[in-house]
Image 1: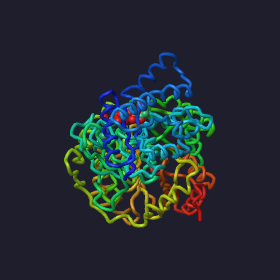
Image 2 (image 1 turned 90 degrees about the horizontal axis):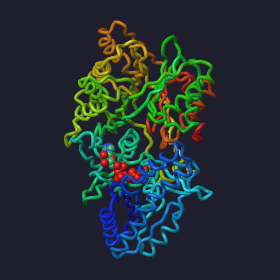
Image 3 (image 1 turned 90 degrees about the vertical axis):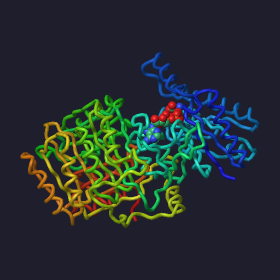
Length: 597
Ligand SMILES: Nc1ncnc2c1ncn2[C@@H]1O[C@H](COP(=O)(O)OP(=O)(O)O)[C@@H](O)[C@H]1O
Ligand SMILES: N[C@@H](CC(=O)OP(=O)(O)O)C(=O)O
Protein backbone atom coordinates (compact mmCIF):
# COMPACT_ATOMS: atom_id res chain seq x y z
CA UNK A 1 0.00 0.00 0.00
CA UNK A 2 1.34 3.40 -0.98
CA UNK A 3 0.47 6.81 0.36
CA UNK A 4 -0.22 9.06 -2.60
CA UNK A 5 -0.82 12.82 -2.64
CA UNK A 6 -2.67 13.98 -5.75
CA UNK A 7 -2.88 17.72 -6.41
CA UNK A 8 -5.34 19.08 -8.95
CA UNK A 9 -4.71 22.59 -10.27
CA UNK A 10 -7.46 25.08 -11.12
CA UNK A 11 -7.56 24.08 -14.79
CA UNK A 12 -8.16 20.45 -13.79
CA UNK A 13 -11.22 21.16 -11.61
CA UNK A 14 -12.69 23.98 -13.71
CA UNK A 15 -16.14 22.41 -14.17
CA UNK A 16 -18.30 19.54 -12.92
CA UNK A 17 -17.03 17.05 -15.50
CA UNK A 18 -13.40 17.78 -14.62
CA UNK A 19 -14.16 17.48 -10.91
CA UNK A 20 -15.78 14.10 -11.56
CA UNK A 21 -12.76 12.97 -13.60
CA UNK A 22 -10.38 14.00 -10.81
CA UNK A 23 -12.55 12.18 -8.25
CA UNK A 24 -12.51 9.06 -10.44
CA UNK A 25 -8.71 9.15 -10.54
CA UNK A 26 -8.47 9.30 -6.76
CA UNK A 27 -11.05 6.53 -6.36
CA UNK A 28 -9.09 4.34 -8.80
CA UNK A 29 -5.91 4.78 -6.73
CA UNK A 30 -7.86 4.00 -3.55
CA UNK A 31 -9.28 0.83 -5.09
CA UNK A 32 -5.78 -0.24 -6.05
CA UNK A 33 -5.19 -0.35 -2.29
CA UNK A 34 -3.48 3.03 -1.76
CA UNK A 35 -4.15 5.75 0.77
CA UNK A 36 -5.05 8.96 -1.05
CA UNK A 37 -4.80 12.61 -0.04
CA UNK A 38 -6.13 15.05 -2.65
CA UNK A 39 -5.08 18.70 -2.65
CA UNK A 40 -7.40 20.88 -4.69
CA UNK A 41 -7.09 24.42 -6.07
CA UNK A 42 -9.86 26.91 -6.77
CA UNK A 43 -11.81 26.23 -9.97
CA UNK A 44 -10.48 27.71 -13.22
CA UNK A 45 -9.97 31.45 -12.93
CA UNK A 46 -11.86 31.71 -9.63
CA UNK A 47 -8.96 33.25 -7.71
CA UNK A 48 -8.43 35.89 -10.43
CA UNK A 49 -12.16 36.68 -10.33
CA UNK A 50 -12.07 37.18 -6.57
CA UNK A 51 -9.01 39.43 -6.89
CA UNK A 52 -10.88 41.45 -9.54
CA UNK A 53 -13.98 41.73 -7.36
CA UNK A 54 -11.97 43.08 -4.45
CA UNK A 55 -10.33 45.61 -6.79
CA UNK A 56 -13.78 46.89 -7.75
CA UNK A 57 -14.46 47.66 -4.11
CA UNK A 58 -11.12 49.16 -3.10
CA UNK A 59 -7.69 49.84 -4.55
CA UNK A 60 -6.07 48.82 -1.28
CA UNK A 61 -7.82 45.74 0.07
CA UNK A 62 -6.51 44.79 3.54
CA UNK A 63 -4.35 41.67 3.25
CA UNK A 64 -6.23 39.85 6.02
CA UNK A 65 -9.55 40.26 4.21
CA UNK A 66 -7.97 39.23 0.89
CA UNK A 67 -6.97 35.94 2.50
CA UNK A 68 -10.46 35.48 3.92
CA UNK A 69 -11.82 36.06 0.40
CA UNK A 70 -9.33 34.06 -1.68
CA UNK A 71 -9.47 31.01 0.57
CA UNK A 72 -13.16 30.56 -0.34
CA UNK A 73 -12.20 29.47 -3.88
CA UNK A 74 -10.50 26.34 -2.54
CA UNK A 75 -13.25 25.76 0.02
CA UNK A 76 -15.78 25.56 -2.80
CA UNK A 77 -13.78 23.02 -4.78
CA UNK A 78 -12.95 20.68 -1.88
CA UNK A 79 -16.64 20.42 -0.98
CA UNK A 80 -17.61 19.65 -4.58
CA UNK A 81 -14.75 17.13 -4.83
CA UNK A 82 -15.87 15.32 -1.67
CA UNK A 83 -19.39 15.04 -3.11
CA UNK A 84 -17.98 13.68 -6.38
CA UNK A 85 -15.92 11.03 -4.55
CA UNK A 86 -18.87 10.00 -2.37
CA UNK A 87 -21.06 9.67 -5.47
CA UNK A 88 -18.55 7.13 -6.76
CA UNK A 89 -19.05 5.07 -3.61
CA UNK A 90 -15.95 5.93 -1.55
CA UNK A 91 -15.84 7.82 1.71
CA UNK A 92 -14.24 11.24 1.65
CA UNK A 93 -13.75 14.22 3.93
CA UNK A 94 -13.01 17.77 2.80
CA UNK A 95 -10.81 19.87 5.08
CA UNK A 96 -9.75 23.52 5.02
CA UNK A 97 -6.13 24.41 5.77
CA UNK A 98 -7.11 25.32 9.33
CA UNK A 99 -8.99 22.05 9.85
CA UNK A 100 -5.96 20.05 8.75
CA UNK A 101 -3.75 21.99 11.13
CA UNK A 102 -1.56 23.91 8.67
CA UNK A 103 -0.12 26.63 10.90
CA UNK A 104 1.53 29.56 9.15
CA UNK A 105 3.07 32.86 10.15
CA UNK A 106 0.86 35.96 9.89
CA UNK A 107 2.24 37.39 6.64
CA UNK A 108 -1.13 37.62 4.92
CA UNK A 109 -1.17 36.81 1.17
CA UNK A 110 2.33 35.34 1.32
CA UNK A 111 2.35 33.33 4.53
CA UNK A 112 4.97 30.69 5.28
CA UNK A 113 4.17 27.30 6.75
CA UNK A 114 5.38 26.81 10.33
CA UNK A 115 4.03 23.36 11.06
CA UNK A 116 1.48 20.82 9.93
CA UNK A 117 -0.32 18.39 12.19
CA UNK A 118 -0.89 14.96 10.70
CA UNK A 119 -3.30 13.51 13.29
CA UNK A 120 -6.58 14.33 11.64
CA UNK A 121 -5.42 13.27 8.18
CA UNK A 122 -3.94 10.01 9.47
CA UNK A 123 -7.11 9.17 11.39
CA UNK A 124 -9.28 9.77 8.31
CA UNK A 125 -6.94 7.70 6.13
CA UNK A 126 -7.05 4.90 8.69
CA UNK A 127 -10.82 4.97 8.50
CA UNK A 128 -10.51 4.35 4.75
CA UNK A 129 -11.45 7.88 3.70
CA UNK A 130 -9.99 9.90 0.87
CA UNK A 131 -8.76 13.14 2.44
CA UNK A 132 -9.53 16.22 0.34
CA UNK A 133 -7.42 19.17 1.44
CA UNK A 134 -7.90 22.77 0.37
CA UNK A 135 -4.70 24.01 -1.24
CA UNK A 136 -3.01 27.38 -0.78
CA UNK A 137 -4.23 28.13 2.76
CA UNK A 138 -3.59 27.81 6.48
CA UNK A 139 -4.29 29.68 9.68
CA UNK A 140 -1.96 31.67 11.89
CA UNK A 141 -1.64 31.21 15.64
CA UNK A 142 -4.67 33.48 16.20
CA UNK A 143 -6.78 31.42 13.77
CA UNK A 144 -6.77 34.10 11.09
CA UNK A 145 -7.01 32.53 7.64
CA UNK A 146 -3.82 33.00 5.61
CA UNK A 147 -2.82 32.13 2.03
CA UNK A 148 0.56 31.01 0.75
CA UNK A 149 0.91 33.29 -2.30
CA UNK A 150 -0.42 32.75 -5.82
CA UNK A 151 0.15 29.24 -7.08
CA UNK A 152 0.52 28.03 -3.48
CA UNK A 153 -1.49 24.81 -3.81
CA UNK A 154 1.61 23.05 -5.12
CA UNK A 155 3.33 24.06 -1.90
CA UNK A 156 0.46 22.64 0.19
CA UNK A 157 0.63 19.38 -1.76
CA UNK A 158 4.37 18.89 -1.39
CA UNK A 159 4.31 19.97 2.26
CA UNK A 160 1.57 17.43 3.05
CA UNK A 161 3.51 14.77 1.13
CA UNK A 162 6.59 15.66 3.19
CA UNK A 163 4.96 15.45 6.62
CA UNK A 164 3.00 12.31 5.73
CA UNK A 165 6.14 10.80 4.16
CA UNK A 166 4.10 10.04 1.06
CA UNK A 167 5.55 7.74 -1.57
CA UNK A 168 4.82 10.22 -4.33
CA UNK A 169 3.26 13.63 -4.84
CA UNK A 170 1.41 13.79 -8.14
CA UNK A 171 0.72 17.25 -9.60
CA UNK A 172 -2.11 17.03 -12.14
CA UNK A 173 -2.28 19.87 -14.63
CA UNK A 174 -3.34 20.84 -18.15
CA UNK A 175 -0.11 19.82 -19.95
CA UNK A 176 1.74 16.52 -20.45
CA UNK A 177 4.38 17.37 -17.85
CA UNK A 178 7.31 19.74 -17.54
CA UNK A 179 8.43 20.98 -20.95
CA UNK A 180 11.71 22.34 -22.25
CA UNK A 181 9.95 25.72 -22.24
CA UNK A 182 6.39 26.98 -21.93
CA UNK A 183 4.51 25.07 -24.66
CA UNK A 184 2.15 28.05 -24.96
CA UNK A 185 5.06 30.10 -26.31
CA UNK A 186 7.04 27.46 -28.25
CA UNK A 187 4.98 24.83 -29.99
CA UNK A 188 8.00 22.62 -30.57
CA UNK A 189 8.79 22.39 -26.83
CA UNK A 190 9.48 18.82 -25.71
CA UNK A 191 8.28 17.06 -22.60
CA UNK A 192 11.09 16.24 -20.16
CA UNK A 193 10.99 12.74 -18.65
CA UNK A 194 13.07 13.44 -15.56
CA UNK A 195 14.41 16.62 -14.03
CA UNK A 196 16.42 17.29 -10.86
CA UNK A 197 15.16 19.43 -7.98
CA UNK A 198 17.82 22.07 -8.59
CA UNK A 199 16.93 22.38 -12.25
CA UNK A 200 13.20 22.48 -11.55
CA UNK A 201 13.75 25.05 -8.83
CA UNK A 202 15.68 27.31 -11.17
CA UNK A 203 13.17 26.80 -13.99
CA UNK A 204 10.16 27.43 -11.75
CA UNK A 205 11.55 30.55 -10.21
CA UNK A 206 12.84 31.84 -13.52
CA UNK A 207 9.36 31.72 -14.97
CA UNK A 208 8.20 28.16 -15.71
CA UNK A 209 4.72 28.51 -14.20
CA UNK A 210 3.97 24.80 -14.20
CA UNK A 211 5.09 24.51 -10.56
CA UNK A 212 5.36 26.90 -7.64
CA UNK A 213 9.04 27.33 -6.79
CA UNK A 214 8.53 27.07 -3.02
CA UNK A 215 7.00 23.62 -3.51
CA UNK A 216 10.24 22.44 -5.08
CA UNK A 217 12.21 23.77 -2.12
CA UNK A 218 10.08 21.53 0.10
CA UNK A 219 10.49 18.58 -2.22
CA UNK A 220 14.24 19.04 -2.25
CA UNK A 221 14.48 19.55 1.50
CA UNK A 222 12.38 16.52 2.37
CA UNK A 223 13.24 14.42 -0.69
CA UNK A 224 9.64 14.09 -1.90
CA UNK A 225 9.45 12.54 -5.38
CA UNK A 226 7.10 14.59 -7.58
CA UNK A 227 5.38 13.54 -10.75
CA UNK A 228 3.87 16.31 -12.89
CA UNK A 229 1.14 14.64 -14.94
CA UNK A 230 -1.70 15.50 -17.30
CA UNK A 231 -5.14 15.42 -15.65
CA UNK A 232 -6.77 14.29 -18.90
CA UNK A 233 -4.88 11.03 -19.61
CA UNK A 234 -2.84 8.27 -17.99
CA UNK A 235 0.46 9.52 -19.43
CA UNK A 236 3.48 9.24 -17.15
CA UNK A 237 4.38 12.94 -17.08
CA UNK A 238 7.69 14.19 -15.64
CA UNK A 239 9.51 12.89 -12.58
CA UNK A 240 11.11 15.57 -10.40
CA UNK A 241 13.67 13.82 -8.21
CA UNK A 242 17.30 13.94 -7.03
CA UNK A 243 19.89 14.33 -9.76
CA UNK A 244 21.05 11.06 -11.31
CA UNK A 245 24.82 10.54 -11.10
CA UNK A 246 25.39 10.57 -14.85
CA UNK A 247 23.76 11.19 -18.22
CA UNK A 248 22.92 14.74 -17.31
CA UNK A 249 21.68 16.77 -20.23
CA UNK A 250 23.78 19.90 -20.61
CA UNK A 251 20.70 22.05 -21.10
CA UNK A 252 17.29 21.00 -19.82
CA UNK A 253 15.06 23.97 -20.37
CA UNK A 254 14.52 27.63 -21.13
CA UNK A 255 12.45 29.84 -18.84
CA UNK A 256 11.38 33.44 -19.12
CA UNK A 257 9.75 36.18 -17.11
CA UNK A 258 8.12 38.68 -19.42
CA UNK A 259 7.59 41.67 -17.15
CA UNK A 260 10.74 42.62 -15.35
CA UNK A 261 12.12 45.95 -14.25
CA UNK A 262 15.73 46.81 -13.56
CA UNK A 263 16.96 49.02 -10.77
CA UNK A 264 20.56 50.26 -10.67
CA UNK A 265 22.27 52.10 -7.86
CA UNK A 266 25.30 53.79 -9.36
CA UNK A 267 28.10 55.94 -7.99
CA UNK A 268 28.03 54.06 -4.70
CA UNK A 269 31.06 54.23 -2.43
CA UNK A 270 33.21 51.13 -3.05
CA UNK A 271 33.58 50.04 0.58
CA UNK A 272 32.46 47.14 2.77
CA UNK A 273 28.84 47.17 3.88
CA UNK A 274 27.27 48.88 0.90
CA UNK A 275 25.58 45.76 -0.41
CA UNK A 276 24.22 44.91 3.00
CA UNK A 277 22.47 48.26 3.27
CA UNK A 278 20.93 47.86 -0.19
CA UNK A 279 19.70 44.32 0.44
CA UNK A 280 18.45 45.19 3.90
CA UNK A 281 16.18 47.88 2.46
CA UNK A 282 14.80 45.34 -0.01
CA UNK A 283 14.31 42.55 2.48
CA UNK A 284 12.53 44.87 4.95
CA UNK A 285 9.88 45.27 2.26
CA UNK A 286 10.01 41.59 1.21
CA UNK A 287 10.96 42.54 -2.34
CA UNK A 288 12.23 39.48 -4.24
CA UNK A 289 15.35 40.75 -6.00
CA UNK A 290 16.99 38.68 -8.70
CA UNK A 291 19.89 38.90 -11.15
CA UNK A 292 21.96 40.88 -8.66
CA UNK A 293 25.06 42.24 -10.36
CA UNK A 294 27.67 44.28 -8.62
CA UNK A 295 30.80 45.56 -10.21
CA UNK A 296 33.07 48.53 -10.08
CA UNK A 297 32.02 51.16 -12.59
CA UNK A 298 33.43 54.50 -13.66
CA UNK A 299 35.93 56.25 -11.42
CA UNK A 300 36.27 53.34 -9.00
CA UNK A 301 32.72 53.84 -7.75
CA UNK A 302 30.63 50.71 -7.25
CA UNK A 303 27.44 49.99 -9.08
CA UNK A 304 24.80 47.42 -8.25
CA UNK A 305 21.91 46.42 -10.50
CA UNK A 306 19.17 43.88 -10.01
CA UNK A 307 15.83 42.92 -11.45
CA UNK A 308 12.45 42.84 -9.73
CA UNK A 309 8.98 41.94 -11.00
CA UNK A 310 7.56 44.98 -12.80
CA UNK A 311 4.76 45.16 -10.21
CA UNK A 312 7.27 45.69 -7.41
CA UNK A 313 9.08 48.56 -9.15
CA UNK A 314 7.52 51.49 -7.28
CA UNK A 315 8.27 49.99 -3.89
CA UNK A 316 11.76 48.98 -4.97
CA UNK A 317 12.56 52.54 -6.02
CA UNK A 318 11.43 53.82 -2.62
CA UNK A 319 13.66 51.22 -0.95
CA UNK A 320 16.58 52.12 -3.22
CA UNK A 321 16.24 55.82 -2.35
CA UNK A 322 16.25 54.89 1.34
CA UNK A 323 19.51 52.95 0.79
CA UNK A 324 21.13 55.92 -0.98
CA UNK A 325 20.09 58.19 1.85
CA UNK A 326 21.65 55.90 4.44
CA UNK A 327 24.85 55.50 2.40
CA UNK A 328 25.12 59.25 1.84
CA UNK A 329 25.99 58.86 -1.86
CA UNK A 330 24.73 57.28 -5.06
CA UNK A 331 22.11 57.62 -7.71
CA UNK A 332 19.08 55.46 -8.57
CA UNK A 333 18.35 54.57 -12.19
CA UNK A 334 15.83 52.15 -13.57
CA UNK A 335 14.63 50.48 -16.75
CA UNK A 336 11.26 48.96 -17.63
CA UNK A 337 9.76 46.79 -20.39
CA UNK A 338 12.40 44.14 -19.89
CA UNK A 339 12.30 40.34 -19.89
CA UNK A 340 14.56 37.77 -18.34
CA UNK A 341 15.44 34.70 -20.40
CA UNK A 342 17.28 31.84 -18.72
CA UNK A 343 18.81 28.55 -19.74
CA UNK A 344 18.96 25.80 -17.09
CA UNK A 345 20.80 22.49 -17.08
CA UNK A 346 22.63 20.46 -14.45
CA UNK A 347 25.15 19.22 -17.02
CA UNK A 348 26.42 22.78 -17.46
CA UNK A 349 28.61 22.25 -14.42
CA UNK A 350 30.79 19.91 -16.39
CA UNK A 351 30.67 21.34 -19.87
CA UNK A 352 32.36 24.35 -21.38
CA UNK A 353 30.74 26.24 -24.23
CA UNK A 354 27.16 26.52 -22.98
CA UNK A 355 27.32 30.28 -22.48
CA UNK A 356 28.98 30.72 -25.86
CA UNK A 357 26.20 28.80 -27.54
CA UNK A 358 23.46 30.76 -25.81
CA UNK A 359 25.04 34.09 -26.71
CA UNK A 360 25.56 32.95 -30.31
CA UNK A 361 21.89 31.99 -30.63
CA UNK A 362 20.89 35.42 -29.30
CA UNK A 363 23.33 37.14 -31.63
CA UNK A 364 21.96 35.26 -34.66
CA UNK A 365 18.48 36.49 -33.70
CA UNK A 366 19.88 40.03 -33.31
CA UNK A 367 18.91 40.18 -29.66
CA UNK A 368 20.95 42.58 -27.54
CA UNK A 369 21.89 41.46 -24.03
CA UNK A 370 21.39 44.04 -21.26
CA UNK A 371 22.69 42.11 -18.25
CA UNK A 372 24.12 38.63 -17.66
CA UNK A 373 24.26 36.52 -14.52
CA UNK A 374 25.15 32.88 -14.14
CA UNK A 375 25.20 30.12 -11.59
CA UNK A 376 26.58 26.62 -11.92
CA UNK A 377 23.42 25.43 -13.61
CA UNK A 378 21.85 28.49 -15.23
CA UNK A 379 22.61 31.51 -17.36
CA UNK A 380 20.17 34.43 -17.30
CA UNK A 381 20.13 37.41 -19.63
CA UNK A 382 18.04 40.55 -19.56
CA UNK A 383 16.60 41.61 -22.91
CA UNK A 384 14.07 44.17 -24.04
CA UNK A 385 10.52 42.87 -23.72
CA UNK A 386 9.72 43.14 -27.40
CA UNK A 387 12.55 40.68 -28.05
CA UNK A 388 11.50 38.17 -25.38
CA UNK A 389 9.70 35.82 -27.70
CA UNK A 390 12.45 35.92 -30.34
CA UNK A 391 15.06 35.28 -27.65
CA UNK A 392 13.23 32.25 -26.21
CA UNK A 393 12.70 30.74 -29.66
CA UNK A 394 16.30 31.36 -30.65
CA UNK A 395 17.79 29.86 -27.50
CA UNK A 396 15.39 26.89 -27.52
CA UNK A 397 16.24 26.08 -31.13
CA UNK A 398 19.93 26.92 -30.59
CA UNK A 399 20.25 24.10 -28.06
CA UNK A 400 18.20 21.73 -30.20
CA UNK A 401 15.58 21.46 -27.46
CA UNK A 402 12.85 20.90 -30.04
CA UNK A 403 14.46 17.53 -30.80
CA UNK A 404 13.89 14.49 -28.66
CA UNK A 405 17.52 14.40 -27.62
CA UNK A 406 18.95 17.86 -27.16
CA UNK A 407 22.41 18.30 -28.58
CA UNK A 408 25.49 19.10 -26.56
CA UNK A 409 27.26 22.32 -27.49
CA UNK A 410 29.48 22.02 -30.56
CA UNK A 411 32.14 24.09 -28.80
CA UNK A 412 33.94 23.09 -25.63
CA UNK A 413 33.92 19.67 -24.05
CA UNK A 414 32.65 17.63 -21.14
CA UNK A 415 34.83 17.49 -18.05
CA UNK A 416 35.05 15.00 -15.23
CA UNK A 417 32.57 15.49 -12.39
CA UNK A 418 33.53 18.21 -9.96
CA UNK A 419 35.07 16.56 -6.94
CA UNK A 420 34.66 17.67 -3.39
CA UNK A 421 30.92 18.37 -3.53
CA UNK A 422 29.11 17.15 -0.44
CA UNK A 423 27.85 13.60 -0.73
CA UNK A 424 25.03 12.83 1.64
CA UNK A 425 22.91 9.74 1.86
CA UNK A 426 19.22 10.59 1.77
CA UNK A 427 18.84 9.76 5.44
CA UNK A 428 21.81 11.86 6.52
CA UNK A 429 20.52 14.70 4.41
CA UNK A 430 17.05 14.56 5.96
CA UNK A 431 18.35 14.34 9.50
CA UNK A 432 20.69 17.19 8.83
CA UNK A 433 17.94 19.30 7.34
CA UNK A 434 15.36 18.57 9.98
CA UNK A 435 17.84 19.32 12.74
CA UNK A 436 18.34 22.79 11.30
CA UNK A 437 14.67 23.58 10.83
CA UNK A 438 12.73 25.37 13.48
CA UNK A 439 9.91 25.94 11.07
CA UNK A 440 9.06 23.98 7.92
CA UNK A 441 9.95 26.77 5.54
CA UNK A 442 13.15 27.95 7.16
CA UNK A 443 16.14 28.34 4.91
CA UNK A 444 18.74 25.65 4.94
CA UNK A 445 22.23 26.87 4.21
CA UNK A 446 24.07 23.61 3.67
CA UNK A 447 27.45 24.76 2.52
CA UNK A 448 29.79 27.76 2.51
CA UNK A 449 32.67 27.13 0.16
CA UNK A 450 35.87 29.04 -0.51
CA UNK A 451 37.48 28.55 -3.91
CA UNK A 452 41.00 29.99 -4.12
CA UNK A 453 41.73 28.59 -7.57
CA UNK A 454 39.81 31.12 -9.64
CA UNK A 455 41.02 34.30 -11.31
CA UNK A 456 39.05 37.22 -12.65
CA UNK A 457 38.99 38.66 -16.15
CA UNK A 458 37.34 42.04 -16.74
CA UNK A 459 36.82 43.57 -20.11
CA UNK A 460 35.47 47.10 -20.06
CA UNK A 461 34.32 49.68 -22.58
CA UNK A 462 33.09 47.19 -25.15
CA UNK A 463 30.29 48.06 -27.58
CA UNK A 464 26.77 47.41 -26.27
CA UNK A 465 25.58 45.58 -29.38
CA UNK A 466 24.49 42.01 -30.22
CA UNK A 467 27.26 39.48 -30.72
CA UNK A 468 29.89 40.76 -28.31
CA UNK A 469 29.34 38.11 -25.63
CA UNK A 470 29.06 35.44 -28.31
CA UNK A 471 32.46 36.39 -29.74
CA UNK A 472 34.16 36.46 -26.34
CA UNK A 473 32.80 33.22 -24.99
CA UNK A 474 33.08 31.30 -28.26
CA UNK A 475 36.78 32.11 -28.25
CA UNK A 476 37.12 30.93 -24.65
CA UNK A 477 35.10 27.78 -25.32
CA UNK A 478 37.21 26.93 -28.39
CA UNK A 479 40.27 27.12 -26.15
CA UNK A 480 38.34 24.91 -23.68
CA UNK A 481 38.50 27.48 -20.89
CA UNK A 482 36.12 26.54 -18.07
CA UNK A 483 34.40 29.90 -17.58
CA UNK A 484 32.62 30.00 -14.24
CA UNK A 485 30.83 33.19 -13.09
CA UNK A 486 29.81 35.60 -15.84
CA UNK A 487 28.57 39.03 -14.88
CA UNK A 488 27.56 41.86 -17.16
CA UNK A 489 26.10 44.98 -15.69
CA UNK A 490 23.81 47.30 -17.57
CA UNK A 491 25.47 49.93 -19.70
CA UNK A 492 24.44 53.54 -19.16
CA UNK A 493 26.98 55.07 -21.54
CA UNK A 494 26.62 52.84 -24.59
CA UNK A 495 29.71 50.89 -23.56
CA UNK A 496 29.39 47.65 -21.58
CA UNK A 497 31.58 45.96 -18.95
CA UNK A 498 31.84 42.22 -18.61
CA UNK A 499 33.60 40.14 -15.95
CA UNK A 500 34.11 36.41 -15.65
CA UNK A 501 36.10 33.96 -13.60
CA UNK A 502 38.32 31.20 -14.96
CA UNK A 503 40.60 28.70 -13.19
CA UNK A 504 44.01 30.26 -12.39
CA UNK A 505 45.70 27.61 -14.51
CA UNK A 506 43.71 28.79 -17.53
CA UNK A 507 44.07 32.54 -16.97
CA UNK A 508 46.84 33.06 -19.49
CA UNK A 509 45.01 31.10 -22.19
CA UNK A 510 41.83 33.02 -21.51
CA UNK A 511 43.63 36.36 -21.65
CA UNK A 512 45.32 35.44 -24.93
CA UNK A 513 42.10 34.46 -26.68
CA UNK A 514 40.09 37.31 -25.15
CA UNK A 515 42.72 39.85 -26.19
CA UNK A 516 42.70 38.51 -29.75
CA UNK A 517 38.92 38.98 -29.92
CA UNK A 518 39.00 42.38 -28.25
CA UNK A 519 41.41 43.82 -30.78
CA UNK A 520 38.53 44.76 -33.05
CA UNK A 521 37.03 47.03 -30.37
CA UNK A 522 39.34 50.04 -30.08
CA UNK A 523 37.89 51.25 -26.78
CA UNK A 524 38.11 47.87 -25.03
CA UNK A 525 40.26 47.51 -21.93
CA UNK A 526 41.31 44.11 -20.63
CA UNK A 527 42.28 43.51 -17.00
CA UNK A 528 42.81 40.48 -14.85
CA UNK A 529 43.39 39.56 -11.22
CA UNK A 530 44.67 36.24 -9.99
CA UNK A 531 44.58 37.38 -6.41
CA UNK A 532 40.94 36.64 -5.81
CA UNK A 533 38.82 34.07 -4.03
CA UNK A 534 35.28 33.00 -4.69
CA UNK A 535 33.00 32.52 -1.70
CA UNK A 536 29.76 30.66 -2.30
CA UNK A 537 26.80 30.04 -0.01
CA UNK A 538 24.62 27.11 -1.06
CA UNK A 539 21.24 26.19 0.31
CA UNK A 540 17.55 25.86 -0.18
CA UNK A 541 15.25 28.85 -0.08
CA UNK A 542 17.95 31.44 -0.62
CA UNK A 543 16.05 33.68 -2.93
CA UNK A 544 12.54 33.27 -1.56
CA UNK A 545 14.00 34.34 1.79
CA UNK A 546 15.11 37.85 0.99
CA UNK A 547 17.13 38.00 4.22
CA UNK A 548 19.84 35.49 3.24
CA UNK A 549 21.82 37.88 1.06
CA UNK A 550 21.45 40.50 3.75
CA UNK A 551 22.85 38.15 6.39
CA UNK A 552 25.76 37.12 4.20
CA UNK A 553 26.69 40.70 3.31
CA UNK A 554 26.23 41.81 6.88
CA UNK A 555 28.78 39.22 7.97
CA UNK A 556 31.22 40.32 5.26
CA UNK A 557 30.77 43.99 6.13
CA UNK A 558 31.31 43.32 9.83
CA UNK A 559 34.57 41.58 8.93
CA UNK A 560 35.47 44.65 6.82
CA UNK A 561 35.60 42.69 3.57
CA UNK A 562 34.94 44.37 0.26
CA UNK A 563 32.93 42.44 -2.32
CA UNK A 564 34.04 42.85 -5.91
CA UNK A 565 31.49 40.79 -7.78
CA UNK A 566 28.22 39.07 -6.98
CA UNK A 567 26.19 36.42 -8.75
CA UNK A 568 22.97 34.91 -7.44
CA UNK A 569 20.69 31.99 -8.22
CA UNK A 570 17.92 30.10 -6.45
CA UNK A 571 20.30 27.89 -4.56
CA UNK A 572 23.52 29.87 -4.49
CA UNK A 573 25.02 33.30 -3.81
CA UNK A 574 28.57 33.68 -5.08
CA UNK A 575 30.92 36.57 -4.44
CA UNK A 576 34.42 37.45 -5.56
CA UNK A 577 36.66 38.92 -2.88
CA UNK A 578 40.36 39.55 -2.33
CA UNK A 579 42.43 36.38 -1.91
CA UNK A 580 43.88 37.73 1.38
CA UNK A 581 40.39 38.19 2.80
CA UNK A 582 39.33 34.68 1.78
CA UNK A 583 39.86 32.84 5.05
CA UNK A 584 38.37 35.61 7.19
CA UNK A 585 35.37 35.90 4.89
CA UNK A 586 34.84 32.15 4.96
CA UNK A 587 34.89 32.11 8.76
CA UNK A 588 32.58 35.12 9.07
CA UNK A 589 29.96 33.66 6.76
CA UNK A 590 30.13 30.17 8.29
CA UNK A 591 29.55 31.79 11.65
CA UNK A 592 26.67 33.91 10.35
CA UNK A 593 24.83 30.75 9.31
CA UNK A 594 25.71 28.76 12.41
CA UNK A 595 27.91 26.32 10.47
CA UNK A 596 31.25 26.90 12.17
CA UNK A 597 33.14 23.98 13.64
N1 LIG B 1 8.36 24.60 -18.77
C1 LIG B 1 7.03 24.42 -18.71
N2 LIG B 1 6.51 23.18 -18.81
C2 LIG B 1 5.17 22.98 -18.74
N3 LIG B 1 4.27 23.97 -18.60
C3 LIG B 1 4.73 25.23 -18.50
C4 LIG B 1 6.12 25.50 -18.54
N4 LIG B 1 6.29 26.84 -18.39
C5 LIG B 1 5.06 27.35 -18.26
N5 LIG B 1 4.10 26.40 -18.32
C6 LIG B 1 2.65 26.63 -18.25
O1 LIG B 1 2.15 26.18 -17.00
C7 LIG B 1 0.77 25.84 -17.19
C8 LIG B 1 0.30 24.97 -16.04
O2 LIG B 1 0.33 25.70 -14.83
P1 LIG B 1 -1.00 26.35 -14.23
O3 LIG B 1 -1.72 27.14 -15.28
O4 LIG B 1 -0.66 27.02 -12.95
O5 LIG B 1 -1.85 25.05 -14.01
P2 LIG B 1 -2.73 24.55 -12.80
O6 LIG B 1 -4.03 25.25 -12.92
O7 LIG B 1 -2.82 23.08 -13.06
O8 LIG B 1 -1.98 24.83 -11.52
C9 LIG B 1 0.74 25.17 -18.54
O9 LIG B 1 -0.51 25.30 -19.16
C10 LIG B 1 1.87 25.86 -19.31
O10 LIG B 1 1.39 26.78 -20.26
N1 LIG C 1 -5.98 29.20 -6.46
C1 LIG C 1 -4.71 29.74 -6.12
C2 LIG C 1 -3.72 28.66 -5.72
C3 LIG C 1 -3.19 27.75 -6.79
O1 LIG C 1 -2.18 27.14 -6.59
O2 LIG C 1 -3.85 27.58 -7.95
P1 LIG C 1 -3.36 26.66 -9.22
O3 LIG C 1 -3.05 25.29 -8.71
O4 LIG C 1 -4.53 26.68 -10.18
O5 LIG C 1 -2.11 27.31 -9.85
C4 LIG C 1 -4.16 30.63 -7.23
O6 LIG C 1 -4.81 30.78 -8.25
O7 LIG C 1 -3.12 31.21 -7.06
